Image 1 (cartoon, rainbow, N blue to C red):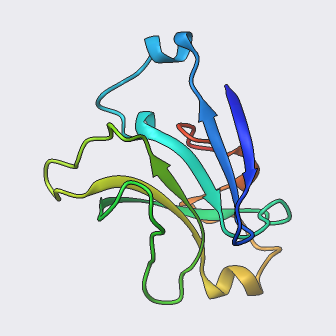
Image 2 (cartoon, rainbow, N blue to C red):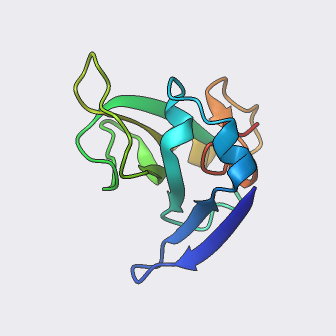
Image 3 (cartoon, rainbow, N blue to C red):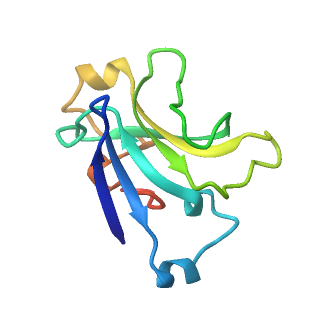
Length: 129
């Protein structure tokens, strides 16, 4: 996968997916990750051992920031392509948000939570590990 890395004016970092003809052949209309255009990291995640990930089926926009309640600190989110469809149940857009909880910041040597991934393995359209 080819990507373009951009530094944004607010200090965020965006990884933009450049689709090749071969990747377009494997396009799946049923997979929400297929519609991811980019991942925006709001801070430097290279030193983080993991970030939690949540798929939000009811995002109000294809591109804007996504916020979570409680003690979640959002560190990144996906942006979608202009042709991304709305979720048929929620009528919103299905997007990913990457976050940390307060306990994650205190216990950096702890085990990776079940809903977490290494941020260095996350790309648009790729789950990460």
